[in-house]
Image 1 (spheres, helix red, strand yellow):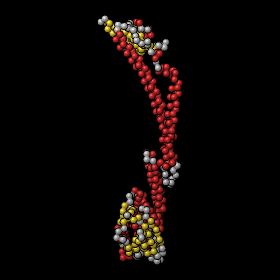
Image 2 (cartoon, rainbow, N blue to C red):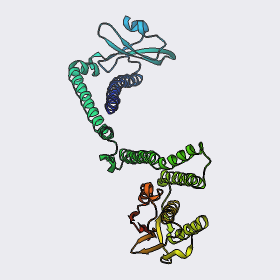
Image 3 (cartoon, one colour):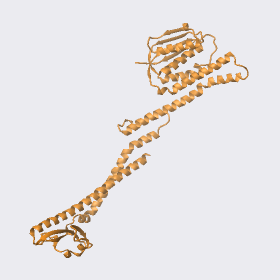
Image 4 (cartoon, one colour):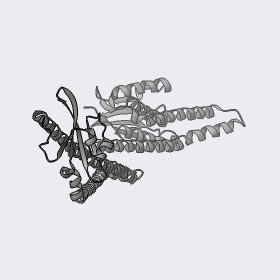
Length: 403
């Protein structure tokens, strides 16, 4: 493509240069001939004025000009191309003569007469002699100038298209997953603007592809467990009616499936949501009220150690989803009798829950949801760490504090 642009630009510049040379050459030739004819015409007019002052004498004061009182006295080649009623004419002959004729209307003895001034200008023609004597030199100079114009056109085309060609080669050499870096991004002209726009477009495209791949991977990984649970429960329902435990497992799978889908769509839309200042303490309190309403958990088992205000930078929806999942998982794994402690110290939010000794391992939430929670924190540039234990479980969240 770059080579085609360069050839097209070279053809345009070369064509313009050659056309300009031809136009100026033609204009110079036309001006030369017009100037020559105007000079001869001026000589005839001056001679006509002189004859009017010397009447009745009819002799011409110039060796180049002859006065004819009768039209029939004019040379035959002149009469063939000049009409008696014409005021002036330029006559070309095949024998080498070149004439200029001027009609002169006079008054002789009260009668109008028409005389004719004939100038043989072949000896004083300069343009034709110049072409014969130095025409080769002029043609050589013209060809040299045309060659120089073509060389300049080629150099200009190469110089102007080289940044575009480099940009195209760099774009063609881009590899999937590698950040784009164009050398022309620092230019202040349109090519620099194009390079910067290409960089941002490639970056956004790679981000969109990574987000799509992550979404497909998360859908495949995170939805498999609840779907398997629901499928197995429904297969057992074909043999005997569902018991309360099986119904609870089915409801659990539906809830987890809905929660996971909500998380996945929130992650897919996360980069389109602008960052804002979020009051973290308010979000924690809202999540706790929601858990108390849904699970009927004993609030006396809760211990809060939080500052009065916790302004952080993030997405309000993602912050609520992250806290809801962390607190929900804490209650799910710890059971209704677990003690829950939420504290904030040295820029780190800790969610700590106890796990009753001897309780069977319950597969939900953290067993396969840590990846999603880590990605939720990563989108907001937060840190999250999981500390499992036999008697307790702690999650540490390091948010980005607002200024």
